[in-house]
Length: 388
Image (cartoon, rainbow, N blue to C red):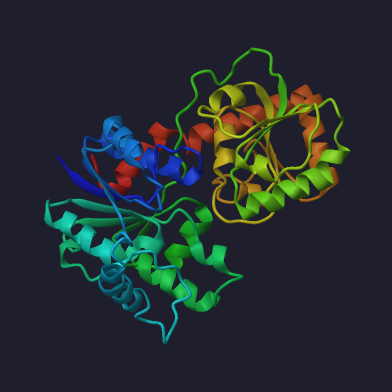
């Protein structure tokens, strides 16, 4: 039985963000291939508590669970300063004369704890999520033998471009990704960029989702539009654009269901808007909707909400940024425009022209089946990892 040490700073069971859903699918993959999985996370980053840890241990996703604190308690302030704060300052700022302009989230304390876990077992694979945690395997002799895999999730330099020196940030991001034997890119754009500069193997591993059981439900659909969005700066900007520029152009009888923490930032209140701050299971809502919205003006990487909508055979109306990361850019079930009037027209076309709707729904389902259906993606990962 192959053994994998799997690090993810967040709790994958809190399925309220695409990155957690992705980590969950990766754990499912290793479990389906009969791997022995030891899972490692960071207490504060993942906002873990005792019940969260117990729930994860009982989920069967991993054989052993480690949730480690990257810093000690401040109850003994002298100990905290002398044995954590001061050593960690020099560790995380060892290049402070020549700033990396790239996030370093690994503390000296956490790296030592991670090393102790590596000492406990002969692992075949080390799987790390995010380049900002890549230094967990750096300068560690115990990490030489296992196959080291990094799931990049996103192109971090692109996210930080307005805050840092792009050149030094990109150089450091490539250096960190190159510490691994295999780098997984979630989008074709990121696979292309990383493969141009990294010496290691860069493989495409798109978002992987189960095919819904009742994709073609014939029940009445009370929602004309569904909009799923978490609370981040990109969604805030995009939602503001949609409700200021597009929504006023739509007929008042179009019913919109908005799901997620983005609701906290929306001031629009109307009888045709249904707000759901959190949904444990999105499938019920997707099956009751006709068209999915993805207004997206900024941000990088694949938009998970788009892939989710495609999995239900829902046509998507989005901006250009909405199709970032998609393997197929055309005939994929998405109608794309950055112009508010055309965006509105795309919505109305799908809601009033049945022939167009049926064709785009067919395209959406086909794009999902070919590129993002979980079992198909698992077979592709077998090739990447050399599993027969």
